Length: 86
Image (tube, rainbow, N blue to C red):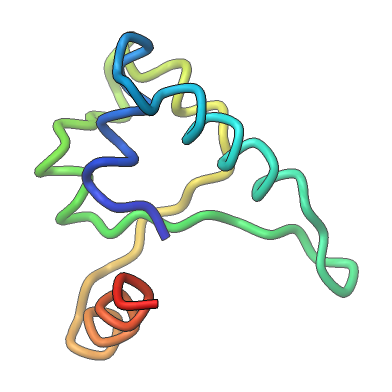
């Protein structure tokens, strides 16, 4: 699950953690677990906060990854909060 800082780092190749986040996302999206692809998730509210509009040409680099939008309902928010705390 990507947070706002990770999305901002991916969108800006001058961001101090751009290479680190890019390497991590590349590794995650290339993994397979039990024969299934592993997909990264970004909550839609995070996409909005980070300014990631998938339809713009500027988003081409980040759009090449298997990152799906996650609706942030109550249960998903609890999972996200748990992930942040670990």
